[in-house]
Length: 401
Ligand SMILES: Cc1cc2nc3c(=O)[nH]c(=O)nc-3n(C[C@H](O)[C@H](O)[C@H](O)COP(=O)(O)OP(=O)(O)OC[C@H]3O[C@@H](n4cnc5c(N)ncnc54)[C@H](O)[C@@H]3O)c2cc1C
Image (tube, rainbow, N blue to C red):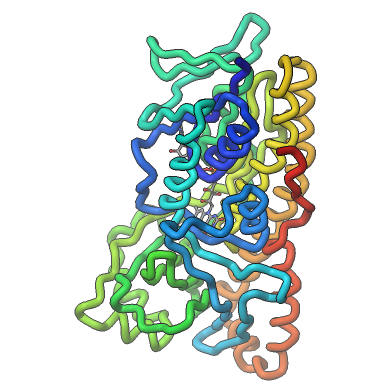
């Protein structure tokens, strides 16, 4: 029986496995980690990602997946609220939703395990690719004694993809000057009734605050890559108190509050000029590591999976023709790449704007002093810019079932 191996059970791998398995294709999904519990996994889903989930038949979310909708967005500069926008932006959109990624992945896996044509290997990192005499990828190596052969290998193994490297595919990195320090506050401290995503520039600091799917308050502080070496020596509770809005300062000063130790999340952004070689294709972060700005990574991953399934399912319904399969891989790349490049540019533009404000005291003062006059125009322009990052820049439809 023709078979597909998917390496990596993140959002890309698990949803692609779901679509292919449902179509009756034999799928082996291999995950390096023994479980889905990770210290951090992104949770923001935009309307584009929610729409993809709906098309996959994964909405409404299973009741055992913790999730919460955002009520709105607020931009605050040097303590002054510049504007607020309510979620959803229009009545035809679903509101931006935060989901617990480990619970989501677990829930899809549970459904998948009901299918006889699906196999899951966990806690087993793929170490290499097997190639035939024509350099076509024909399988993977788990270790010296364990090889698995397949008609196609999909590398969905994330930003540091080994499959990308082993296939000889090249990642063109974009300039990225920031990393993220991630803090959590325990749920009991969170008194805010509404779940607003606050984007704050205070003096030379830029950070975002929101309540996660599990009810904890998350604080994502942008730090310059150079700060990376000494971030462990800094008293972050004190630093956050100095820059936080009043309501958060009160929470942070409360002795019973538990602020987690920060987690350094290294941000890597880029895309591969080519996503496939004969017998292998990389998708999701493996092909285009996304910046965390405006929660795009999972959404792009889900849209990659939908488009890939449209092209792959017809290839695997009959006898495999290598030439036709390789053409399908090329078509997937051609359909997905323009959106990825556009979205990464929009993310860069958002970062550049925040960085301008962070570096210029004059600009911050001007924006604050003229806020009553310029706020409506800035709000309008912000909403306009977010549109593509919320809805995607292309139409992604499930054509093949
Ligand atoms: C700080 C930060 C915050 C973010 N927040 C958000 C957000 O709120 N919303 C959003 O949409 N995106 C967010 N993102 C981006 C998002 O996390 C990624 O774009 C998304 O997870 C990509 O999914 P993926 O399945 O392609 O890769 P991953 O989620 O990285 O999954 C890859 C999987 O492959 C496995 N793997 C790796 N190597 C091997 C191997 N050799 N063998 C077998 N398995 C292997 C890994 O264990 C992992 O489970 C954020 C990113 C960062 C850095």
